[in-house]
Amino acid sequence: MIKNLYNYREFLKTSVLKEFRGKYKKSFLGVLWSFINPLLQLFIYSVVFSFIMKNDIDNYAIFLVVALIPWTFFNTTIIQSTSTIVTNGGILKKIYFPREILPISVVTSNLFNFLISCLIIVVALIVSGVGISVHILLFPVVLLIQYVLLIGCAYVLSSITVFIRDLEYFINVLMMLLFYLTPIVYDYSMIPNEYRMFFNLNPVLHLVNAYRDILYYQQIPDVSSLCILAVVSFGLLFVGYKLFKKLERNFVEEL
Image: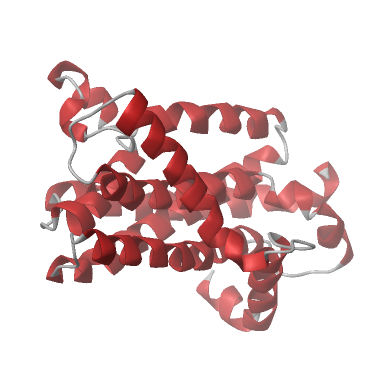
């Protein structure tokens, strides 16, 4: 995989830029939507859970934003990567290139979008007085784990969707459910103990908790959870890539 990516690095670069620019094609505000979108979501959830469904969490807007933006990165990437092979069926039939570039392009373009959106988090932390601690040095570690996890998911979902188109619609529903199974608008401590084992099966939960520990609580995240998640992420990347390579020989025929 690494050899293919290196040999076709210019194509990969072009593909990533195409994915990134495609989000804002014919948009008047363009890349500014990377800021506007999360800000609008933050405003809506803050109003609902701060004033309508009142809670006693300090600096709730900060508590929310440090989890909401990483979730948006995860959610958007999963939905887009699921259909990336089907969407690019035309180019697959015309020219040869390593097919694994397409899922990676989606994940990487959304990574850039996420990094831009992270400016909102930095500004919010400074303006609110919460500040930034030395624990932010662990941010790249958590981001790397999320990036690897997303590539593994992208390989599995994009390859299977070529043969089972209904998967794309199922994933949309699943991501809505996953949002409420992840402590984004509520704190992990609010989950009853008898249900935590079930909730802990959700990998996004551990990512969100890690981001929140680093940025909001300003403490070292649960190392054991992160290590397990890292092993699972790299394992999924390996299995996902093998599955992708096995199924790709029939992509053109199915498309």
